[in-house]
Image (cartoon, rainbow, N blue to C red; front, side):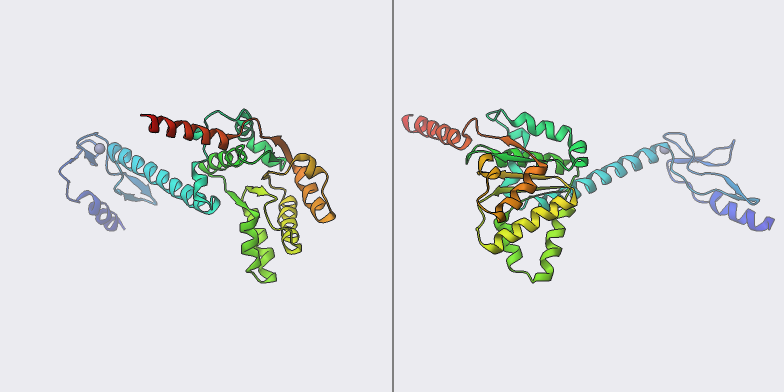
Length: 278
Ligand SMILES: [Zn+2]
């Protein structure tokens, strides 16, 4: 037994010294010439001495840095994957707070929603962003989507024409599975409610998506050109059961103070005029 231990110990002790190593006379361990900390440990287990290689201080620092870099790039890759899945329309990548021109006075509510995200999520509270065409509702919702995705929260921003297109090509059994899959996202954003077809099939599927989301108790954000008046007074039962569920969980915010697209156009026109007059 003694012989085995000696052989085992020697196996490590006798390893060839690297150029930046020396054998410390006081503890007979291999040390690093740069940081003067050991590159060998010494452990005794059931009478046996083990002297495995360990990282010296400077090796450990390099290791930690590389590990942190690897974790960061893994996290970034994960966020990119989540964005690719959650932001189906590439133009949504640009809907960020950094691009906010400050034209929309309601934008502070988007920041507020994010600040209180944990609470909103726990209460399954969403938003109903309504107002005229071109007032920045999608931008408002897109900023929330991007900010949450950056934090690693799964978000899907989509619209009913896209969902209906997918559902119409599916077998009946697969539809529920697809609708359930939308609830894997912590936040679902339906952009432009009301632009979808009004067919029986469409209304049925819109209800199924909204109802499934409602039952999942996960938040939903809806943007729409419909007025709150229209949502509160639906034309028929098919619409009322959809709108009721939305109004129960989504806090209405009117977004209509300035017409952003119109302002953009006039700014463009100003620029064009300037160029032409030069
Ligand atoms: Zn070292």
